[in-house]
Length: 361
Image 1 (cartoon, rainbow, N blue to C red):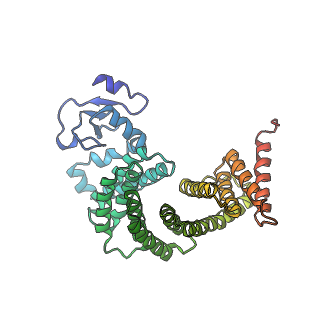
Image 2 (image 1 turned 120 degrees about the horizontal axis):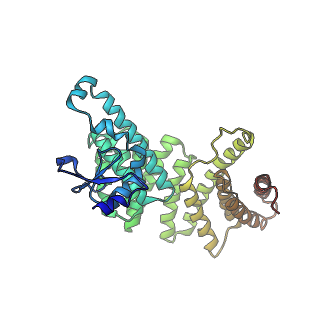
Image 3 (image 1 turned 45 degrees about the vertical axis):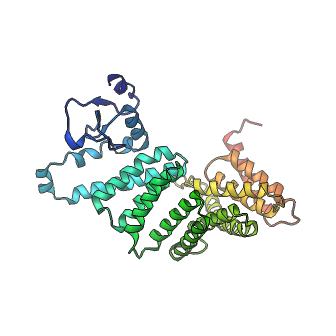
């Protein structure tokens, strides 16, 4: 036990529990019986050092000290201060955990996202109750993490609870997210017709909330296209992929123009989290490149979008790579309207590289 604790010096230390603490001694990660205690906050417990390390990396490092006032509140302090302050602290924790989990999911760190998503769900239940509409985002977040890890039975259970909680919700955004998650589950289990039904509903509710040409809505078009591709309905899939590419092209062109206008502004955020967009566009590019009858115009469009995404994200190497792919494809079509913008982006990336590395060839 001492060896396990000492192995975690790089994170928060854990120490063996000196005596039983009743219901408090549940592992933060798995809710099993705990025998180790975080030495920093002393209000968080674990069954093994491995679970402590996973929780530290996943979320505990961010919220360790925030847990102290919540978990050490006595009946007297609650009576004096009322429940409002504690509830506000928990709402803050929910938002932190949601943000961390979404960021890790966007980066493809699905295992690391689990602790934050699990804590978000538990804390949401404490604040809102298990069956209210405000629980839906927490259920969906944990379902998304488990979906990526292939834990489909857990996903089905979580989505069932989300459906029940969101049944009477008038919010289009909640319904769009729920249908998207259900569509993904049915896609993973091979029930493609059910998946198409849910993605169609996803698109409807997303378009009502964000507009038909929103990048949020086009995620539903992408998922529907992916199902049609699995069904070998290639013309339909290509048509929907084209809709997704056009939406992202319009969005990214505006972002690029904004970047050009604010290039001297040090406060401008140039690294938005577009991990999901990169993944979608890469799938679309590979789909087109691997198809026997290649569409050079579509390859140019998708590769150009990827080049813009990586440029705005600060990766000039990948921006040049995808930009070169886009330029080669566009030059196969006489007088293609993307050739000039692609060349302009490549020149911009190369000039920035020269500024950053003036001595390199």
